Image 1 (cartoon, rainbow, N blue to C red):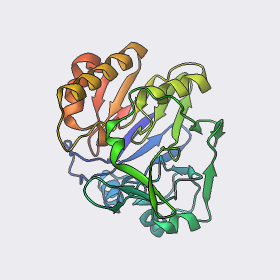
Image 2 (image 1 turned 90 degrees about the horizontal axis):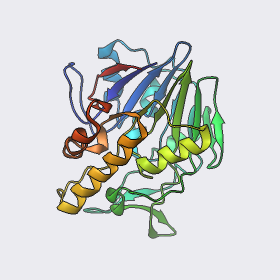
Image 3 (image 1 turned 30 degrees about the vertical axis):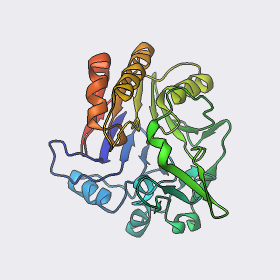
Image 4 (image 1 turned 180 degrees about the vertical axis):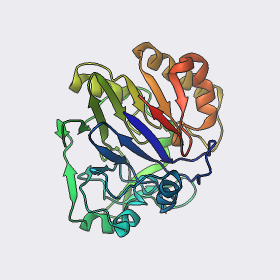
Length: 274
C-alpha cells in the first residue's frame, strides 16, 4: 500500500505547496482513495505537480467536519469527481473555534447536496469494498487532546463543547497488512487505537494520523510530560506511526526519542510504501 501526502502544513523536499490542512492519497493493488481533501484547491495543484490523477479515485473519505480537511472537496467535484463521499452523519453541524474570536471551521454546506454523499453511522464498521472500511464510536477518554478546549458546536444559538462524534477513521487492509488512517485524532490517538483493536481484533501495522498536539500558546512542563506519556503508550503497541499536520513539530520532536524509527513525519508531497 502507498500513502502520498497531497498537502500538509510543512514542505518537504518536493516543489509543492504547504497549507494548514491535510489530504492523503492511498493506493492498494486494486483501489485508490482520497482521505480528506485539504483546505483548498492547493491540494489539487499539488496533485498536478506530483503527477497524480485524483478525479478517478474509488472514494473520498472525510475524517471530520472541519474546513481544513474538507475545503478542497468542491474543487475536486468541479474537476470532475463523481464518486462516493463518505462522512459521518453529523459532520455538517456548525463547528467553531473560539480561541481568539468566533471563527466558523465547519464544512461547505454545498457538500451536503452532493449526490454521491454517503452518511456513516456511529456504531459498527462500514465496509465500502474489500480493502477499505470505516469506523467511529470511540468512547475512551485517555489523553484527550488539550487543543480541543477551544473547539465548539453551535446549537440553538449557544456554544457547546465539541464531542467529536463527527470524527471517523479509515482502515485499509490488503494481504497481511493493515493501516489505520485518521485526520486529527480529536478523540485521542490512544483511544482510537483501542477502538480499532476492539473492532478488528488487533492493532494495525501502521497508523497515519495527526495527533492534535499543536499548541500556539507554547508548551509548559505538564504539556511536555503528557506528550511523552502518549509516546510511551504508543511505543508499547509496536505500531509504526506516520504523523504531521496538527501534531506540530515541537510535539513530534518530543515523541521521536521515545518512538525512534517507528515515528515518521509526513510533509507535503511525501510518499511512503507500506
